Length: 372
Image (cartoon, rainbow, N blue to C red; front, side, top):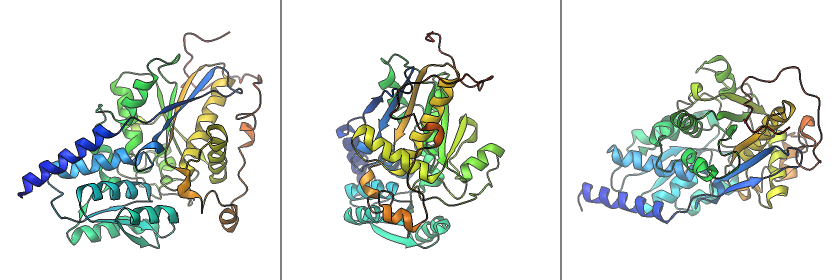
Protein backbone atom coordinates (compact mmCIF):
# COMPACT_ATOMS: atom_id res chain seq x y z
CA UNK A 1 0.00 0.00 0.00
CA UNK A 2 1.35 3.43 -0.92
CA UNK A 3 1.42 6.29 1.58
CA UNK A 4 -1.29 8.16 -0.35
CA UNK A 5 -3.48 5.06 -0.41
CA UNK A 6 -3.07 4.72 3.36
CA UNK A 7 -3.87 8.43 3.77
CA UNK A 8 -7.06 8.04 1.71
CA UNK A 9 -8.10 5.11 3.88
CA UNK A 10 -7.40 7.01 7.10
CA UNK A 11 -9.41 10.00 5.91
CA UNK A 12 -12.29 7.71 4.94
CA UNK A 13 -12.28 6.15 8.41
CA UNK A 14 -12.45 9.57 10.08
CA UNK A 15 -15.32 10.66 7.81
CA UNK A 16 -17.18 7.44 8.57
CA UNK A 17 -16.68 7.93 12.31
CA UNK A 18 -18.03 11.46 12.12
CA UNK A 19 -21.06 10.32 10.11
CA UNK A 20 -21.84 7.69 12.76
CA UNK A 21 -21.67 10.23 15.59
CA UNK A 22 -24.81 12.08 16.69
CA UNK A 23 -24.69 15.65 17.94
CA UNK A 24 -24.44 16.17 21.69
CA UNK A 25 -27.57 17.19 23.58
CA UNK A 26 -28.31 20.74 24.67
CA UNK A 27 -30.04 20.47 28.05
CA UNK A 28 -32.33 23.25 29.29
CA UNK A 29 -32.24 24.01 33.00
CA UNK A 30 -34.77 26.33 34.66
CA UNK A 31 -33.84 27.50 38.15
CA UNK A 32 -36.53 29.10 40.37
CA UNK A 33 -34.03 31.68 41.61
CA UNK A 34 -33.70 33.03 38.06
CA UNK A 35 -37.21 33.08 36.53
CA UNK A 36 -36.17 35.36 33.66
CA UNK A 37 -32.99 33.51 32.74
CA UNK A 38 -32.84 30.16 30.95
CA UNK A 39 -29.76 28.00 31.36
CA UNK A 40 -28.63 25.67 28.58
CA UNK A 41 -25.90 23.09 29.12
CA UNK A 42 -24.27 21.38 26.14
CA UNK A 43 -23.51 17.81 27.20
CA UNK A 44 -20.14 17.16 25.58
CA UNK A 45 -19.62 14.23 27.96
CA UNK A 46 -21.93 12.19 25.71
CA UNK A 47 -19.27 11.87 22.99
CA UNK A 48 -17.96 8.30 22.44
CA UNK A 49 -14.78 9.16 24.33
CA UNK A 50 -16.60 10.97 27.12
CA UNK A 51 -15.58 14.60 26.69
CA UNK A 52 -15.58 17.65 24.45
CA UNK A 53 -12.01 16.69 23.50
CA UNK A 54 -13.47 14.15 21.06
CA UNK A 55 -14.07 17.03 18.64
CA UNK A 56 -10.54 18.36 19.13
CA UNK A 57 -8.88 14.96 18.73
CA UNK A 58 -10.63 14.36 15.42
CA UNK A 59 -9.57 17.82 14.22
CA UNK A 60 -5.95 17.26 15.29
CA UNK A 61 -5.78 13.95 13.43
CA UNK A 62 -7.26 15.54 10.30
CA UNK A 63 -4.83 18.45 10.57
CA UNK A 64 -1.82 16.16 10.93
CA UNK A 65 -2.93 13.95 8.05
CA UNK A 66 -3.76 16.77 5.65
CA UNK A 67 -0.49 18.58 6.40
CA UNK A 68 1.54 15.47 5.63
CA UNK A 69 2.83 15.15 9.19
CA UNK A 70 1.25 11.80 10.10
CA UNK A 71 2.28 8.67 8.22
CA UNK A 72 1.43 4.99 8.14
CA UNK A 73 2.75 3.15 11.20
CA UNK A 74 4.02 6.31 12.90
CA UNK A 75 3.76 6.68 16.67
CA UNK A 76 1.59 9.57 17.85
CA UNK A 77 2.38 11.62 20.95
CA UNK A 78 0.68 14.46 22.78
CA UNK A 79 0.77 16.20 26.14
CA UNK A 80 -2.51 16.09 28.05
CA UNK A 81 -4.15 16.24 31.46
CA UNK A 82 -6.11 13.16 30.46
CA UNK A 83 -9.30 13.81 28.51
CA UNK A 84 -7.60 14.72 25.22
CA UNK A 85 -5.30 11.73 25.64
CA UNK A 86 -8.30 9.40 25.97
CA UNK A 87 -9.85 10.79 22.79
CA UNK A 88 -6.55 10.66 20.91
CA UNK A 89 -5.93 7.08 22.03
CA UNK A 90 -9.39 6.18 20.71
CA UNK A 91 -8.68 7.69 17.28
CA UNK A 92 -5.18 6.18 17.18
CA UNK A 93 -6.70 2.75 17.75
CA UNK A 94 -9.25 3.46 15.00
CA UNK A 95 -6.39 4.11 12.56
CA UNK A 96 -4.18 1.31 13.88
CA UNK A 97 -1.42 3.62 15.12
CA UNK A 98 0.60 3.48 18.37
CA UNK A 99 -0.02 6.33 20.82
CA UNK A 100 1.91 7.84 23.73
CA UNK A 101 0.25 10.23 26.19
CA UNK A 102 2.53 12.49 28.22
CA UNK A 103 0.58 13.30 31.38
CA UNK A 104 1.24 14.62 34.89
CA UNK A 105 1.73 11.77 37.36
CA UNK A 106 -1.10 13.24 39.46
CA UNK A 107 -3.70 12.76 36.70
CA UNK A 108 -6.89 11.02 37.86
CA UNK A 109 -6.18 7.24 37.93
CA UNK A 110 -9.32 6.50 35.92
CA UNK A 111 -8.05 8.64 33.03
CA UNK A 112 -4.71 6.84 33.00
CA UNK A 113 -6.53 3.50 33.00
CA UNK A 114 -8.78 4.62 30.14
CA UNK A 115 -5.81 5.59 27.95
CA UNK A 116 -4.18 2.22 28.60
CA UNK A 117 -7.43 0.36 27.95
CA UNK A 118 -7.52 1.96 24.49
CA UNK A 119 -4.00 0.71 23.74
CA UNK A 120 -2.13 3.88 24.60
CA UNK A 121 1.10 4.18 26.57
CA UNK A 122 1.19 6.69 29.45
CA UNK A 123 4.46 8.56 29.98
CA UNK A 124 3.89 10.13 33.41
CA UNK A 125 5.98 13.12 34.52
CA UNK A 126 6.30 14.43 38.07
CA UNK A 127 6.31 18.12 37.12
CA UNK A 128 3.21 19.12 35.09
CA UNK A 129 5.14 22.03 33.58
CA UNK A 130 7.45 19.59 31.75
CA UNK A 131 4.78 17.79 29.68
CA UNK A 132 5.49 19.92 26.60
CA UNK A 133 9.23 19.31 26.75
CA UNK A 134 8.68 15.57 27.17
CA UNK A 135 6.27 15.42 24.21
CA UNK A 136 8.88 17.21 22.08
CA UNK A 137 11.43 14.62 23.20
CA UNK A 138 9.24 11.88 21.73
CA UNK A 139 8.75 13.91 18.54
CA UNK A 140 12.51 14.29 18.10
CA UNK A 141 12.67 10.50 18.04
CA UNK A 142 10.18 10.14 15.22
CA UNK A 143 6.74 10.46 16.78
CA UNK A 144 4.09 12.73 15.27
CA UNK A 145 3.35 15.39 17.88
CA UNK A 146 -0.34 16.30 17.57
CA UNK A 147 0.41 19.31 19.81
CA UNK A 148 -3.05 20.14 21.08
CA UNK A 149 -1.75 23.15 23.02
CA UNK A 150 0.00 24.64 20.02
CA UNK A 151 -2.46 23.75 17.26
CA UNK A 152 -5.95 23.54 18.78
CA UNK A 153 -7.08 27.00 17.69
CA UNK A 154 -6.03 26.45 14.07
CA UNK A 155 -6.85 22.74 13.66
CA UNK A 156 -10.54 23.41 14.35
CA UNK A 157 -12.61 25.01 11.59
CA UNK A 158 -14.06 27.96 13.51
CA UNK A 159 -16.28 29.09 10.60
CA UNK A 160 -18.48 26.02 10.81
CA UNK A 161 -18.26 22.35 9.82
CA UNK A 162 -20.33 21.47 12.89
CA UNK A 163 -17.88 22.93 15.36
CA UNK A 164 -19.14 23.33 18.91
CA UNK A 165 -20.23 26.96 18.42
CA UNK A 166 -22.19 26.26 15.25
CA UNK A 167 -23.78 23.22 16.88
CA UNK A 168 -24.98 24.99 20.05
CA UNK A 169 -26.37 28.00 18.18
CA UNK A 170 -28.24 25.75 15.74
CA UNK A 171 -29.77 23.95 18.72
CA UNK A 172 -30.74 27.30 20.25
CA UNK A 173 -32.51 28.48 17.08
CA UNK A 174 -36.06 27.75 18.25
CA UNK A 175 -35.63 28.71 21.92
CA UNK A 176 -37.36 31.85 23.32
CA UNK A 177 -34.02 33.63 23.75
CA UNK A 178 -32.26 32.08 20.79
CA UNK A 179 -29.31 34.48 20.85
CA UNK A 180 -27.66 33.84 24.22
CA UNK A 181 -26.62 36.71 26.42
CA UNK A 182 -23.54 34.72 27.45
CA UNK A 183 -21.69 31.58 26.40
CA UNK A 184 -19.45 30.15 29.13
CA UNK A 185 -16.55 27.77 28.62
CA UNK A 186 -13.27 26.83 30.27
CA UNK A 187 -9.80 27.16 28.77
CA UNK A 188 -7.30 24.32 28.54
CA UNK A 189 -5.65 24.71 25.16
CA UNK A 190 -7.69 27.85 24.50
CA UNK A 191 -9.05 26.23 21.36
CA UNK A 192 -12.69 26.03 22.44
CA UNK A 193 -12.85 29.66 23.57
CA UNK A 194 -11.11 30.75 20.35
CA UNK A 195 -13.56 28.77 18.21
CA UNK A 196 -16.63 30.09 20.04
CA UNK A 197 -15.42 33.69 20.22
CA UNK A 198 -14.50 33.79 16.54
CA UNK A 199 -17.75 32.16 15.47
CA UNK A 200 -19.86 34.63 17.47
CA UNK A 201 -18.15 37.48 15.65
CA UNK A 202 -18.37 35.67 12.31
CA UNK A 203 -22.14 35.43 12.77
CA UNK A 204 -22.42 39.08 13.83
CA UNK A 205 -24.01 38.20 17.18
CA UNK A 206 -24.10 40.31 20.33
CA UNK A 207 -23.53 37.24 22.52
CA UNK A 208 -20.67 37.67 25.00
CA UNK A 209 -18.05 34.99 25.73
CA UNK A 210 -16.98 34.29 29.31
CA UNK A 211 -14.06 32.01 30.16
CA UNK A 212 -14.36 30.27 33.53
CA UNK A 213 -11.04 29.25 35.05
CA UNK A 214 -9.64 28.24 38.45
CA UNK A 215 -8.59 31.11 40.68
CA UNK A 216 -5.00 32.16 40.13
CA UNK A 217 -4.74 30.72 36.62
CA UNK A 218 -2.33 32.03 34.01
CA UNK A 219 -5.17 32.70 31.55
CA UNK A 220 -6.97 34.97 34.01
CA UNK A 221 -3.84 36.97 34.80
CA UNK A 222 -2.78 37.14 31.16
CA UNK A 223 -6.21 38.21 29.92
CA UNK A 224 -6.42 41.07 32.44
CA UNK A 225 -3.02 42.47 31.48
CA UNK A 226 -2.77 41.14 27.89
CA UNK A 227 0.50 39.52 28.95
CA UNK A 228 1.21 36.24 27.17
CA UNK A 229 4.12 35.62 29.55
CA UNK A 230 1.79 35.49 32.59
CA UNK A 231 2.00 32.41 34.80
CA UNK A 232 -0.34 30.89 37.36
CA UNK A 233 -0.04 32.20 40.91
CA UNK A 234 -1.14 28.84 42.33
CA UNK A 235 -2.05 25.32 41.32
CA UNK A 236 -5.47 23.72 40.99
CA UNK A 237 -7.04 20.28 41.36
CA UNK A 238 -9.45 20.95 38.50
CA UNK A 239 -7.97 18.97 35.62
CA UNK A 240 -8.04 20.24 32.05
CA UNK A 241 -8.15 23.95 32.86
CA UNK A 242 -6.21 26.35 35.08
CA UNK A 243 -3.04 26.10 33.01
CA UNK A 244 0.30 27.16 34.54
CA UNK A 245 1.10 29.23 31.43
CA UNK A 246 -0.84 31.09 28.74
CA UNK A 247 -1.09 28.51 25.97
CA UNK A 248 -0.51 29.61 22.34
CA UNK A 249 -4.13 28.90 21.38
CA UNK A 250 -5.70 31.28 23.90
CA UNK A 251 -6.92 34.36 22.00
CA UNK A 252 -7.37 37.28 24.43
CA UNK A 253 -9.26 39.46 21.99
CA UNK A 254 -12.32 37.20 21.55
CA UNK A 255 -12.97 36.78 25.29
CA UNK A 256 -15.26 39.36 26.91
CA UNK A 257 -14.87 38.30 30.53
CA UNK A 258 -12.90 35.85 32.67
CA UNK A 259 -14.38 34.59 35.95
CA UNK A 260 -12.03 32.94 38.43
CA UNK A 261 -13.54 30.16 40.56
CA UNK A 262 -12.08 28.67 43.73
CA UNK A 263 -11.51 24.91 43.57
CA UNK A 264 -13.93 24.21 46.43
CA UNK A 265 -16.64 26.17 44.61
CA UNK A 266 -15.99 24.28 41.36
CA UNK A 267 -16.41 21.01 43.24
CA UNK A 268 -19.62 22.32 44.81
CA UNK A 269 -20.84 23.24 41.33
CA UNK A 270 -20.03 19.73 40.16
CA UNK A 271 -22.15 18.27 42.96
CA UNK A 272 -24.95 20.74 42.23
CA UNK A 273 -25.03 19.54 38.62
CA UNK A 274 -25.33 15.95 39.80
CA UNK A 275 -28.30 16.91 41.97
CA UNK A 276 -29.99 18.82 39.16
CA UNK A 277 -29.28 16.47 36.25
CA UNK A 278 -28.97 13.07 37.92
CA UNK A 279 -25.51 12.27 36.52
CA UNK A 280 -21.93 13.10 37.34
CA UNK A 281 -19.68 15.52 35.49
CA UNK A 282 -16.08 16.58 36.04
CA UNK A 283 -14.64 19.52 37.92
CA UNK A 284 -14.36 21.86 34.94
CA UNK A 285 -18.11 21.47 34.39
CA UNK A 286 -18.55 22.68 37.96
CA UNK A 287 -16.29 25.65 37.22
CA UNK A 288 -18.41 26.55 34.20
CA UNK A 289 -21.65 26.18 36.16
CA UNK A 290 -20.49 28.50 38.94
CA UNK A 291 -19.56 31.12 36.33
CA UNK A 292 -23.00 30.72 34.73
CA UNK A 293 -24.66 31.31 38.10
CA UNK A 294 -22.56 34.41 38.78
CA UNK A 295 -23.44 35.89 35.41
CA UNK A 296 -27.10 35.11 36.04
CA UNK A 297 -26.96 36.77 39.46
CA UNK A 298 -25.58 39.94 37.86
CA UNK A 299 -28.26 39.87 35.17
CA UNK A 300 -30.98 39.36 37.79
CA UNK A 301 -29.70 42.27 39.88
CA UNK A 302 -29.82 44.50 36.81
CA UNK A 303 -33.35 43.42 35.84
CA UNK A 304 -32.13 41.76 32.64
CA UNK A 305 -33.45 38.57 31.12
CA UNK A 306 -32.05 36.20 28.53
CA UNK A 307 -30.24 32.90 28.20
CA UNK A 308 -26.85 31.53 29.20
CA UNK A 309 -25.17 28.56 27.52
CA UNK A 310 -22.50 26.57 29.35
CA UNK A 311 -20.54 23.41 28.66
CA UNK A 312 -20.61 20.05 30.42
CA UNK A 313 -17.08 18.98 29.62
CA UNK A 314 -16.50 15.36 30.64
CA UNK A 315 -17.84 12.37 32.54
CA UNK A 316 -17.70 12.57 36.31
CA UNK A 317 -16.89 8.88 36.78
CA UNK A 318 -13.31 9.72 35.85
CA UNK A 319 -13.02 11.57 39.16
CA UNK A 320 -14.60 9.04 41.53
CA UNK A 321 -11.22 8.51 43.22
CA UNK A 322 -10.31 12.20 43.31
CA UNK A 323 -12.79 15.09 43.20
CA UNK A 324 -15.72 12.93 44.32
CA UNK A 325 -13.73 11.38 47.18
CA UNK A 326 -14.07 13.22 50.54
CA UNK A 327 -10.90 11.52 51.79
CA UNK A 328 -8.91 12.67 48.75
CA UNK A 329 -10.12 16.24 49.25
CA UNK A 330 -9.28 16.19 52.97
CA UNK A 331 -5.74 14.98 52.20
CA UNK A 332 -5.25 18.08 50.07
CA UNK A 333 -6.77 20.49 52.58
CA UNK A 334 -9.74 21.34 50.39
CA UNK A 335 -12.77 22.56 52.31
CA UNK A 336 -16.03 20.60 52.06
CA UNK A 337 -17.79 21.62 48.83
CA UNK A 338 -20.11 24.58 49.31
CA UNK A 339 -21.51 27.12 46.90
CA UNK A 340 -20.23 30.70 47.25
CA UNK A 341 -22.25 32.63 49.84
CA UNK A 342 -23.69 34.96 47.21
CA UNK A 343 -25.09 31.96 45.33
CA UNK A 344 -26.74 30.24 48.30
CA UNK A 345 -30.17 30.71 46.74
CA UNK A 346 -29.14 29.85 43.20
CA UNK A 347 -29.92 26.15 42.97
CA UNK A 348 -32.83 25.40 45.26
CA UNK A 349 -34.28 28.49 46.92
CA UNK A 350 -37.38 30.21 45.48
CA UNK A 351 -36.97 33.40 43.52
CA UNK A 352 -36.44 36.50 45.61
CA UNK A 353 -36.03 40.10 44.56
CA UNK A 354 -32.82 41.78 45.60
CA UNK A 355 -31.87 45.43 45.64
CA UNK A 356 -30.99 46.86 42.26
CA UNK A 357 -27.41 48.15 42.19
CA UNK A 358 -26.75 51.77 41.33
CA UNK A 359 -25.02 50.74 38.12
CA UNK A 360 -24.85 47.58 36.04
CA UNK A 361 -21.97 46.35 33.88
CA UNK A 362 -22.16 47.84 30.41
CA UNK A 363 -21.79 44.40 28.87
CA UNK A 364 -25.11 43.20 30.31
CA UNK A 365 -27.45 43.25 27.36
CA UNK A 366 -31.09 44.10 28.05
CA UNK A 367 -33.26 42.17 25.57
CA UNK A 368 -36.09 44.02 23.88
CA UNK A 369 -38.69 41.76 25.48
CA UNK A 370 -37.68 42.62 29.05
CA UNK A 371 -40.38 41.54 31.46
CA UNK A 372 -41.91 44.18 33.70
